[in-house]
Length: 228
Image (cartoon, rainbow, N blue to C red; front, side, top):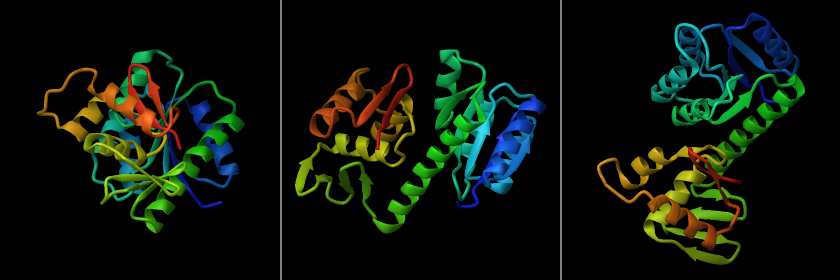
C-alpha cells in the first residue's frame, strides 16, 4: 500500500480516537484536528491525500473549511469526504457545492469506512496514472481526445457538439466527483452568460444518448457526476 496521508477533522474525541486507530492499523499516515481552524491549517501545511471532515465543528464548520481548502492554491488537491451525523439534504448540498467529493453518514463501521476510503484513493490513483501516461482522458470504454473534440470507443469515433464535449471533459476530469449545476454553468458557459434552466439537462440527455445511458448520474438537487 502507498503511504497515503489522511487528515481526520472531528471534534468528538472518542470518534477521533477510533478512526485514527483503525486507519493507522491499515498503514495510513494519520493527522488529526479537533476543530475547523486547526483542520484548515493542517490541510494547507501537510497537503494530505484524503480528508475526513466533520461538518459540525468549533472555530469553523466543515463546509467552510472545505471551501477554504478548495480556494487555496495547493500543489496537491485532497479528496474531501464529509463525515457527519447530519443527514439533511441541505447539508449534503452545501458540502458538494463547497467542493466535497463524498458524503459519509455516521455512525459507520470501521471496516465499511476503510473500504470507502480505499475506493476513493484507488480512484485518485487511477486518475493520476492516466494523466501521467496519456494527455487525453480515458474513462470506462471511452477515450476523450482533447485536441480533436472527439470521443473514441474502440475504433468508433463519436462526434460531439462543442458544449457537449466541454461538459463531458469537465465531468471526466474527476470521475465520481459531483459537479454542482452552478459549477457547470460557470465553467462551461461562463457566469456572465444567461442560459435557460434546462440547458444542462438537455446536454446531459444528449451525452447519455451518444455515449451510454448510465455514464452520467444525476444527484438530485445538487448536480451530476461521471461514472467510470
